Length: 372
Ligand SMILES: Cc1ncc(COP(=O)(O)O)c(C=O)c1O
Picture 1 (cartoon, helix red, strand yellow):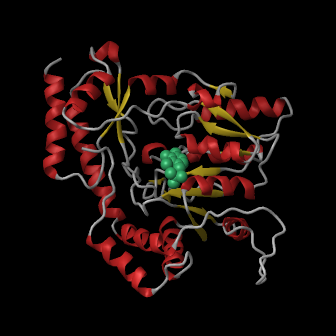
Picture 2: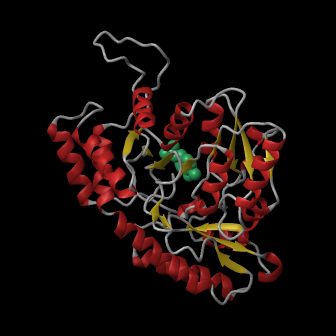
Picture 3: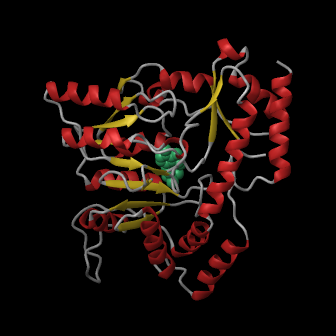
């Protein structure tokens, strides 16, 4: 049983088949335009450009903000490598900042301290990239004013968070630009893809132009700068449109599953769910944190027990400041992300899990707890 497999069915089949039969097999097409409009509307953003991946979106957002060699960009240390990789693609350097224990999201106190310290030393931060980890929005009520005060643009990495809301605003609507992902394991998928969102028409137009090889509007392929081949195809956009129609249903299924995990662990000492108080999360992945001193067992023990029954789990993402590829990068860390990595576990969370599969996971987990 997989952690978060794609949830596709007859609706997706009919959308993709219609797109194929319409003849729009070339990258551009009506489903691509409609998918951009529909995601922008859902998120509450004025403009969107559909891309081949979320990573491409993060890269283009930084390029459009003129981030480049010599610049520093704040990245939460608890994230998937794509956030930090996008910074490195531009020639800039990531500075890794630790997270809040309850959510795993960028710690606003540390961000405040870092921004103040750098300003005192006359150093510039080119951008801050908060991540909405596992589908719960970062604390933008605090992050956005801090960045505004420091004059630093925010690029929201909402790759994991489509469908989430915080204080009445949707994930993907915070910051100068935001990026969502439609990778195969995400809440909705185009098998691979992403979208950049912003209210800034000029920024989105520049990303659109860069995403199609930076072609000048003439027929003979004139280029005045280097572009990228980052566009999503019309066929995949059709798949995304079908998935988007089912987004609320899929969020609700993941939420119901999270509630069952919450009930199961409620009476277990030393165990808590990440972002357990977030009512607006999309519940993309449900992760627990185990305090081994209180629980008397460790997260990998449960992972082994479930793994023996062919149930997939995964550790919480390994922090970026511990990754060999980023050895030597600057960081402001307190040990929180390291603890979540050591003592955290992501449980099967997919919306396609059947009732039989869910009962199997819950029973296997209960069996493990009974044996302690
Ligand atoms: C936090 C985060 N950022 C960025 C990405 C990159 O998205 P993609 O796989 O669409 O490039 C992912 C997931 O893959 C992610 O989890």
